Structures are given as C-alpha cells and as structure tokens.
Amino acid sequence: MIDPNLLVEDFDETARRIARKGVDVAEVARARDLLLDRRQRQTALDLKRAEMNAASKKIGELYRQSKAAEAETLKAAVAQLKTEIGELEAEQSGVEAELSDSLLRLPNLPDDDCPEGSGEEDNVVVRHHGYDPADYSGKTYLPHWETGSRLGIYDGERSAKISGSMFSLLRGDGARLLWALAQYGIDLNREKYEPIAPPHFVRTETFTATGHLPKFEEDAYKLRDDDLWAIPTGEVPLMSLHRDEILPVEELPKRFLAYTVCFRREAGSAGKDTRGFQRVHEFQKVELLILCTPEQAHEEFEGMLADAERAIQLLELPYRILDLCAGDLTFSSHRIFDIEVYSPGVDRWLEVSSVGKFTDFQARRARIRYRREQEKPRLVHALNGSGIATPRVWAAIVEHYCQPDGTIRVPEVLVPYLKCETIGARD
Image (cartoon, rainbow, N blue to C red; front, side, top):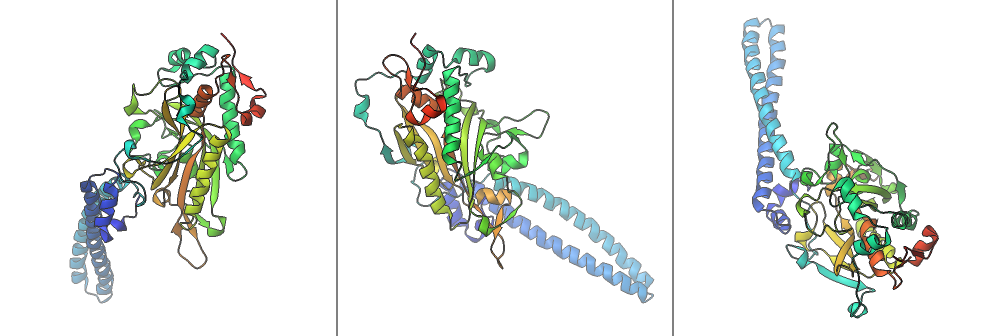
C-alpha cells in the first residue's frame, strides 16, 4: 500500500497522482478522513487510559492513607472509565477495519515519467526489434491454433471437453515445445537469479501482499474448504519469501526466479480474444523478482528488462517495447514496460512480459525491510517481470516458424532442448 502519511502531509499531490490511474479523488479523501478519524480517536483513547491509570494509582494511595470512602468513590469512577474505554476501543476497531480496507484499495502512485493516458491506446512504443511490416506483405499466416490443430500438436476440442473454454491441451511435439521454452527460460536466468520452486496455492495474507487482494478477488481461483488461493503469477509466492523479515543491506539485491503454473479467471474477458493462447485461465511462466534498496532499483529495473528482452531476441521473434501510460498500469505498479511479440496469424501484438517497478508498495504490505548499521529499518523496493511466458511465445513460434511443407522449424536456441530442428508433420 502507499505510505499513509502522504494522505495527510501531501494530500493534493497524492490525490493528483492516484487520479492518473483513474481513481476517484473521493476514494483518496475517504482514506484520508478515516486516517484522521483514527488519529483523533486514538488520542481520545490514550487520554482516557492515562486518566484511568492515574486514578487507579490514586486509589492505592488513598487506601494507604486510610481514606477508604474516597477510594471507593474513585473506584466507581474508574469502573465508568473502563466502560467508556471499552466503547471507544470497539469504535476504534471499526474505524481501523474501514481504514485498512480503504488503504488496501488505493493503488500505487504512478511514476511521474510514465505517459499520460487512460488506456492501452495511450501506451507509448519505445522501440521495435526485428519487425518490418514489409516482411509480412503479400504473405498468409495461419493462427497458431489452426496450424497446431492441423499438425496434431494443439487440441482445442479436447481441452474444451475436459475443462471448458480458455484452457489448452498440447500433444506430442507441442507439449515438448512448451516444456523446452520453460527450461530455456530457467537456464537463461538461473545464474543471475536464484531458482525457487514455490507452492502454487497460497494463504490470503500472501495473496494480499502483492496487491491481488482485495482488488482482484473476482479474477482469482480460491479453494472451497481452505484459506488458499491458486497463484495468478509466480510473483505472489516469491514476494512473501521474506515477509515480516529485516534483511541486512549487504544481502541486497536479492534476485529470484520461479517456474510456475498460473491460474486466472479473467472474469471480465469472456468471449474476447479467447481462441488459442491469446487469453487462457491456466498457463506456465518463468517469473523474475528482485528485492533491492531504492538506490539500486533503477539499475536493477534496466537489467531485468534486458533479461526479458534477451529471451525473445534469442528466439529471433519480432517484438516491441511499450511504456505503459498511467491509466493502463497495474494496481500495484509504479512503472511498467511491456514486451509484445508480433503474432502474424492474428495480426496482433501479444504481451509476453511486463517488467515493473513497484517501489515500496508491496513491501509495505508484506513488511519486508532492510537495515544498514546504526540506521532504522527501511522498506525494500520490489521489481518483477516475466522471464518468459510460454503460451504466447509458443504461439508466436508456431506462426512465425511454420514452413511451406507444413512443419515448424525449431528456433536455434531451442534445438538442444528438443533434440531436433523441426517439429510436426504433413497432413
């Protein structure tokens, strides 16, 4: 969450920045008012407690002075104070709960340098790599689900029979290609990032730490009988590795990678771009996450973006980098650069990685701090991004590398994993 002090000490500027994400200023004002209300109630509560403590001490002195009647009168007053304090504590507890909910629903402040805008149409293309529209002129490309179905490596019919829409089923070389991409993404980053094999189901507190709750509850899968949620990204368990810890500054930056299956309901996307791998409920991804000091954050961010780009460059897929506008940033992010691969079969750019800065927003929720000698603990800054998101990269390879004879040429960097140069067969 954002620093609550900003709501009181710099309300106008804080409200202006949050409004860039499309948040009503009234929501920000409500959080501020609840914060001020809590402070006022806390002051009144502290005064009542001090008054009761002083009176309780006085009672003992009166008894020692053999002034029993005065002591009994004061005891009645203390009993009344206890009742009043109990009422104030109950009211304070209600305000605390409202304030906590209000603060958890406020997004992170966007970077002042990110573009202005309200949606994806306002995102700024920073650069293209390996893309020339002339390369596609006069050529026909089939969507990956058609090519995959023809080759018998993608079975949309059976995935729908098993699980319904927005799931996938890969067979033979299609499955092997997916697994190759996952291992490729791990191998490419494992020397710089510590590999982690985390749980795929996490507690509510873990889910809340990254900002996925309460904001995105409807997009998440929750177990019926347990306080456990299916993870939508490896970021969720990775961010809680050091929850409630104070790290020595010498250990920073900490860099982690995780290969996980990810689950997203995508409740608001039914019927939209749901064929093939454009949008699915379940997918595999190699996630990168860094915990660092504020001073390290910029260099680490640039390094993570380069790491994510390298994975696509080595696959020789055309891509572009987008600087997301304030209105298209995710709830928890401060700045995001998206990597989008061109998909000629659907003539669309498909996001394959979002590399984001999160400042101390998630660390404040997760209570992750670091300490320098003789200094008070400070909150770490967090960064995360996809090392490689397998489904859409799989789709781009099938569409780009389909050859005239109907086979799929294997990108050179994946040949050692697949042990072959082509996959698929003629009809």
